[in-house]
Length: 580
Image (cartoon, rainbow, N blue to C red):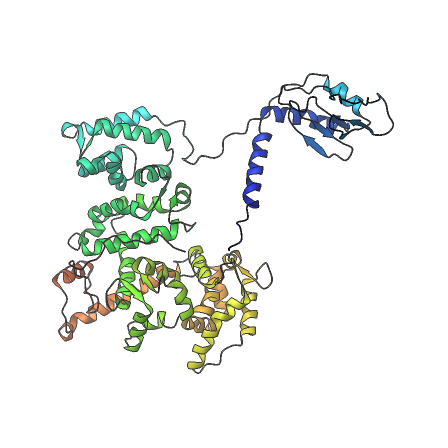
């Protein structure tokens, strides 16, 4: 039987909450302010309040030990009243050189100090009703309200825009003008259309839209909260993966930089899946599969959405919307998915290696990785396309916080939040075996461990925490040492001073992922140009649809990159929300 759940942390949080609520009450703060003044004057205070059922007590002894409880009956303290005992009553002398005792009704002993007379004189004076300083509101989950927003003026502007449409009804094609009238980015148009009910009726009336937008302006006070309100399901304050589908489908349908995809609907879902996974990879820092307003504010996603209107080339928006990045990721996936079931398992990697295919070091990129690491990455023994997006970006750029968390979870076998020496040795054993098969003498684990500890400098000796790796500027070297033989050897052959220079110039150049994607895309372009000259040697020519897309891109798809048949039984929007 599993041990019972420990409740102490939750109870402590509740006690803290109740204490803060009590401390913030005006009566409590008034008493505290009054008695604090007495303490500053050096006076010894011992106050006892009356009836135990109605009143409470406050005392300050010579050691400044304070016990405060508020008077529930009135705001000023009252003299001590000791209930009489049925058998006897012990009276308290007015003056005494030592502590005296008073017997209560239940026989318990009550103590009073020698300064009780001074305290009693003080309690007879009325307590000032000075209020505590009001603390301004500092938590705004829906954004800080702005005083200079004229909602009526905005509504009038929207009504004027609707007056240009027949019967004051806007279709989805008209929503671009409505979005600009709402002072929103252009590509908010479909979320605005859907929230006003246009997805059900095919149009939006002016009255329904004005009512919807007025309510939104009154409850949401910044772009992040408005965007979440537009896309989220009713009653939800967060965004899940499927909430982005209508918004991204409109980007695919209407953005000039993606016009060539209009005749290739098979690629719509793949591109949208890639963008959604990249959004959650960069924005959802809590790994919950739910993007909140706070996470959206801290990211640059809404800035990229606004840039979609200004930038005709989506490839310039490398964080989320780049088609070149999607092309590189999907080509990698398609090469590894030899049976084209949209899942990659370890057999796909092994089969690819056994066949001896050498395509711009594709084998070396993944078969050189630790199989023990891959077992931790693969979900239920295989990777979906969405999972592969996370895997590839994390593998090629191990310097970002998300990738550090990604690989840390793979190495933390027991899930205790730290990497022990046993876990490091577990992954290093396989690296040693691979080095020996390459006729390279591996470094003893003890020596490697010393290097890694000097590299990371953990706060707790013998345990590497996630925060240690995030503080370390060379986390990629740490992970490559245990995961990727090829990259580990590259680091070993580099000049140590060049590594230091790279760390010092970090942030001044493009990221490792952007550099990798650009290099891979150039290789793909070169290969396609070469394949155009000898296309007749391929057993299976390109489909007309593939040739159309390639001509738009200036490319020709390789023979192994066939467009999936539109008749295959696939779920176009298949996502997995579990990133653990």
